[in-house]
Amino acid sequence: MADAKVIPFDDDRSRGGPGRTARGRAAGGGRHTGGDGGRTGQEEERGGAQPPLTAVPGADSQAASQDGPGTRRGDRADRGDWDRRIAEGLAFLRRRITGEYEIDEFGYDADLTENVLLSALRPVYEKYFRVEVLGIENIPSEGGALVVANHSGTLPLDALMLQVAVHDHHPAERALRLLAADLVFMLPVVNELARKAGHTLACTEDAQRLLERGEIVGVMPEGFKGLGKPFSERYKLQRFGRGGFVSTALRAGVPIVPCSIVGAEEIYPMVGDFRTLARLLGIPYFPITPTFPWLGPLGMVPLPTKWTIQFGEPVPMDDYPPEAVDDPMLMFNLTDQVRETIQHTLYRLLVRRRSVFF
Image 1: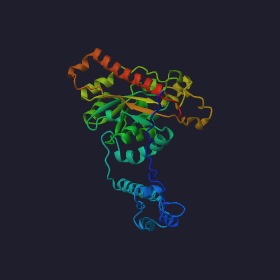
Image 2 (image 1 turned 120 degrees about the vertical axis):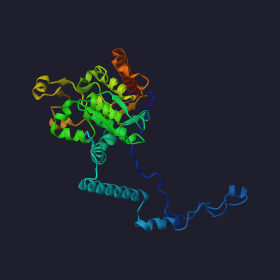
Image 3 (image 1 turned 180 degrees about the vertical axis):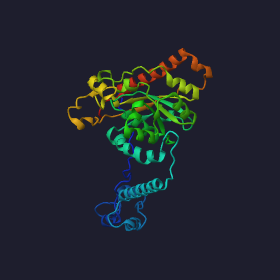
Image 4 (image 1 turned 135 degrees about the horizontal axis):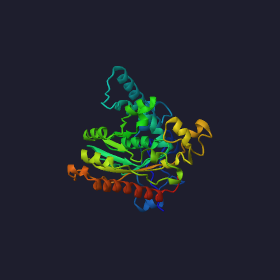
């Protein structure tokens, strides 16, 4: 089985070797030429010794004098990175105070999302789940597209990680506008954060308006059926509804990009569902996992699984006439095509995966 290719993210370690300083060269002299300091036999055969490799005089001492003795390139790079972060943070605070930021008609605050919300998710994305992204080039650089992905994990962390993946890995840093369920907008704090992060209600009207504006829209048709399925049914896609996402893409004339996510199924292995308590709380399910509710709040910490997100080849929708949305058989076939593409990609990713955690 082939080893999984891991793409390192934000590796800002110094690529230069340690080298020798000017002081070390002065102590050690030039090239070693033998115990008697004479020419070697090979040099005599070539007709003379080659000139030693020397550095520009005083180059290292000048570099050291700029930052003080003992300062390395990596230290200077780290300090420059922190200076940049501080400057960006101060600029962000100034914009928030002066009101120099925009919020669109759906409540999306791009400035807050990029500088705060995505920054908070990025350590989880890069260090905890170590997400590997494949096929990002299948998302267009401009114009609208509908990203259709599988849904799992008991809590919708896969949607958030998908949003970070599209923004951070696409060359155009495109924003993913996710369609969310009604329950998201009924929760007091979550409602406000979801709106500011660009999420909107999963309805045809809102989705079509976003697509016609040239946005990248994300939808997970399994909904709560996929999110709350038992661990025994992991990576088995649930029903994709009646194909509403296909008709939306057809009306907007934008391609559908299938997306497969591996790794989210194991973060909260759901072994049971306390349905009576779920009905009392008005939620779709009340998960029982090996750690929750037995360990209390500690049981809500997800397991550090290794994730892979793969974007498949776009399914074009602009080849169909406008009246195609009224053809139920076509809607069924296109829905099944997208679903089968995601399912087969999940199987391929699972075959190449060596470990759940590594």
